[in-house]
Image (cartoon, rainbow, N blue to C red; front, top):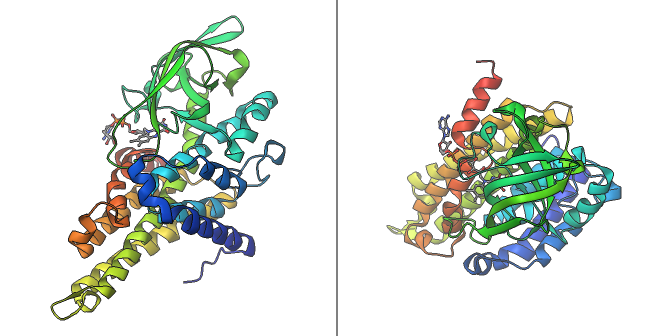
Length: 380
Ligand SMILES: Cc1cc2nc3c(=O)[nH]c(=O)nc-3n(C[C@H](O)[C@H](O)[C@H](O)COP(=O)(O)OP(=O)(O)OC[C@H]3O[C@@H](n4cnc5c(N)ncnc54)[C@H](O)[C@@H]3O)c2cc1C
């Protein structure tokens, strides 16, 4: 079906991303996943193609423009790679560059953005804490004003890219309880008192580095505060929009991968004297997958159109985020069923994707929190 929002530039970008992922990532997906890591050069190659430049000024190495459709097609193609961990690690910088571009001083932008946007260095966003990630208003890490500095104390966890990142955006409490007491800070990784360690084994995203971050009297200059004091909660919420759109688009790609692998297998495999694709039950599974993927993709397109039209449709993004992870859950499960034992073996793209369903339902705002937010946005 033709995409009514396609332009020459968007198609060219999508084809560039697709070529890059299919040629440079897919052939290594299993090897990198099993190794739990991948070469840093992938960050730089992705940077050179402009993957991290949306919404970033050209003087800081960005593209100098934004386009929600291109962001979404990047997410879809990343999802189709079948190696969510690598994609999460390289993509995590996109959730920290937004607050830097929008809220940091020119000096900090110049120090951080060229290196992060080019892929030479890593960047990460630290919001979640051991006491919980859903209730952002309850952040416990503190930032105490001391002369011309703030002093950070506390702990973050589940931070994607956190082990290797050189630059961090960190949420910390500068005021009283609740949403009105939170601020955002730029924290370089080499600041004394800052340490980190791996969170250890994960169900999926094996080759993504996920860290706990520790702040022990970490002293940063007052100008490292991003935006106004105690106004960080709003910035965090705004920043979630593109992260959630990106994750939803990845769900489109991951679901497509599951469907494509199912079709390929069902055409090759024979049961009861005929190819599986000839069995009506299998055909219906594929029809169900396809219809859900079409609906999700259409919703993503509509959200992108609204963003390009100047509106950030927060309710629809929240609905799309949990709808997306539900579509993915369905497609991964049906694909696994169609592949049977072959799908259950380590190394198949379907097996890898199946392991990554849950992080898409939890990370970036869980299904429950997305439902809450959607209903709240409906005025209820
Ligand atoms: C692999 C991975 C990578 C991540 N990367 C990052 C990152 O880069 N930066 C970052 O800041 N965070 C990151 N996160 C954290 C992620 O955003 C949180 O895991 C998520 O917000 C949920 O927080 P939690 O895990 O602490 O669960 P909790 O907040 O403790 O919630 C546990 C469960 O209870 C449910 N729940 C909570 N409150 C309610 C309620 N009121 N009603 C109904 N159900 C409720 C939740 O939906 C969830 O299912 C990552 C997480 C993972 C797993």
